[in-house]
Amino acid sequence: MAKKSKALLEAEARVAELTALLSDATAPESDEPLRKVHGTKSAGITLGEATAKRQPSKPTHEEFALAHKGGPAKSMCAADECRETTVGKSKYCKPHRSESRARFKAMLKAKAEAKEEQHKRFGELVTYARQQATTAASGPVVAGYVRFAPGNTSFVYWARENLNGVQKSEGGGIVLPLKASDPSIRAFAQAMAKGLSIAEPRVTVLFATG
Image (cartoon, rainbow, N blue to C red; front, top):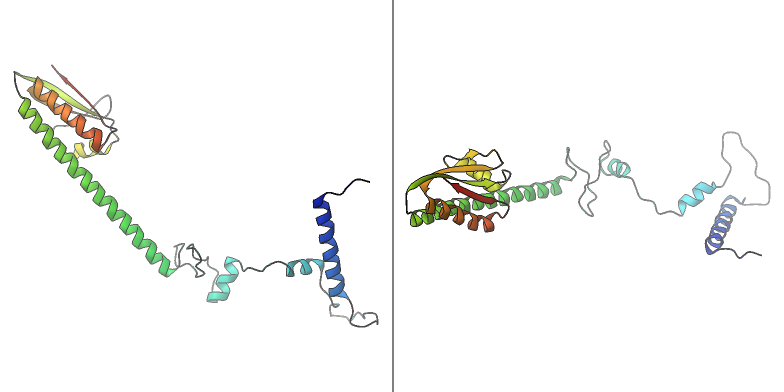
């Protein structure tokens, strides 16, 4: 005879338990046979009801909202362990919506301050690079340029608005045309490359004279 698996034994035990529960629930109070009365239900519960009573009951979002507010069904607040209903189009209740808005405003403020600080560093770097170019000046004036790439970097966005004379580069990014001695252009480009390697490592700095 084949040995029954553990899962099969558990299933048979469950069926036996439900059958006993149904038998107790539908048993008549006396030995007399139950009489059918027109318009009434016989005593007892169905197997589905017996099973349902053994399950922990938890209201749905809609049931909770109706019982809690007595109005149209709403969703419950998305905050952890909060049983209040949402307000307006927010996913939070009124108190948690206020907290969420405060956090969002604080995040925007922090981003704005970080951006302002970064732009300040860019300006200081350009000033420093120009000082290095002035110190290194020697020889005849030539035409040259310094190129900054790629174009989708914070420095390039800032330079387009704050550096006079910058032009769009055909190879991507921007170019800054310069008229100075070869050592000056070289010193300016090297100072910018060194500073941007810390301030924004994604930027590549190239220069040419001629």
